Image (cartoon, rainbow, N blue to C red; front, side, top):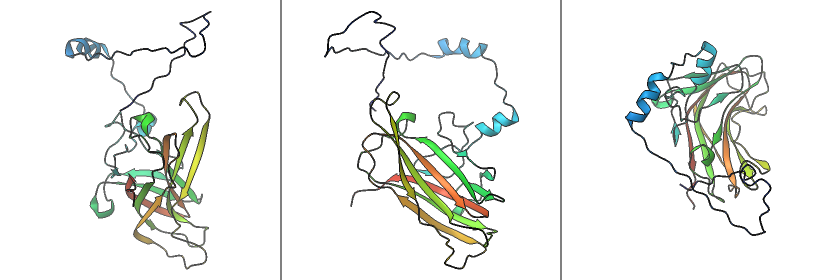
Length: 241
């Protein structure tokens, strides 16, 4: 993996003028230590006790590449990239997924007609695989809907992708959001709306990835009233034809 670190020189070169074209090099040293060093530190560390609200926030499903079966929480994978609910009706079930493979994410819309889960920090900035410029990526899932209100405005369950494009060094440059859209809707008002939808495969294949995508956002959305289930969510690069 290729890591790039950016350093503000002002604290070290106060009052200094550098000629144009000056090239500076710096090194970073990482030292591997054993239990003789970490043991005394851990012995003095106090146990962290989470409040119920903190625990609920920490106990989110971690992202598992390339397919997320929603069996691991952020408490078990502290380095994981967790999914975040953006609406009141979101919950996480660890069992009962499509084909019995792990768990699933739920969006229950009661009064509001839209709910969303997001995984917003996917990519090389968070220790993921770097995005390849020009490559296409697929986000897919198996979905089902129960207790569907056929009188509400509906689009059904969908998956969506958004890239963040950087125009220079990641933390000091302008950021541009590149919206890749959503998967096709399963429901529309020009067709009879059923009371439920059995497990159905949906997917979105992105346009070519922008050249300097520093991270991506994966989105699970349910438009309509009822309960939608998202299982076997998979993120993968599409092989060239």
